Image (cartoon, rainbow, N blue to C red; front, side, top):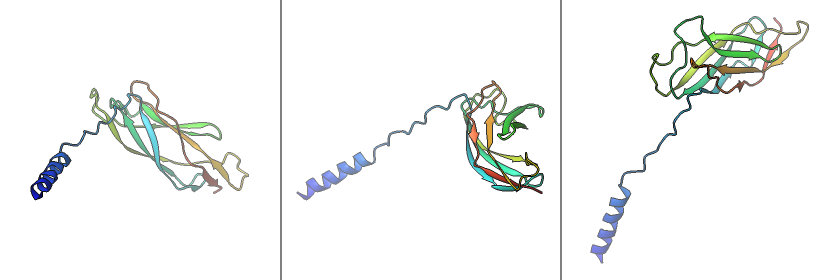
Length: 151
């Protein structure tokens, strides 16, 4: 009987110690995808404070960013006006490399304005989008509401 118990425990250990099924990550799309990690601050003074956006990105073929600093690929739109600010993103993987990449970008938006100069405050939502070198646009993020106060 003890022999059977030892044999059962040994069999359980052998089965339990077997190789786990591999976790297979689904392939990333060649179209970039972005997610908002953080926005701060949530209240700013017009023409005085900057807003920092931290954005997580993923791209299946690594063609995010450009060599030329005049090539803009990240866009933040003030939905009140609408006014779009364009930002340069440097190469995030070597040019020609076909590799999946992911990481975080920190983007600083300076000098938010009051649309109505007589307002005691205004709220604004910003939309954020990223473009890769193939011309594919990511999903559009909508940042949480930010309150803008006069100077």
